[in-house]
Length: 165
Image 1 (tube, rainbow, N blue to C red):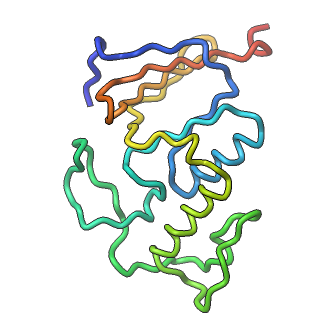
Image 2: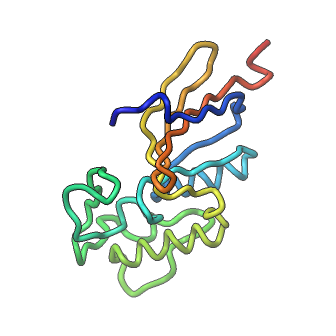
């Protein structure tokens, strides 16, 4: 995706304790733990939904924002690991008769997790991370496309004061 430099909004001086993730199973867990660790958390999710690969859609090709549809799920899919090891230590998957659960149940679990730990306040839906790259002096450049506002955002993270010494 080509970035129009004129559309970029610059934000500089972000501190090292900022944390970015996506809204799939790993990203939600990382966001929850990042916040508990004291990080400023932002979750950029390119779709309209929390749940990552567990969101099923019949759509193929491109989505409404022109991105490839990422759905590895097919209707009726079940997990390939038992639910007993797929939950989180502080939030296990609720008891069910079957050990291998449906993608619908897994998606419901992830939404419950996001609600339980109030993660929706960090999530920016329809925000596509274009690029993350290291810069000089331990800085990072992050370019994000905000689809609802049709704007690009260029974020620079700067080293923490401890790293500047």
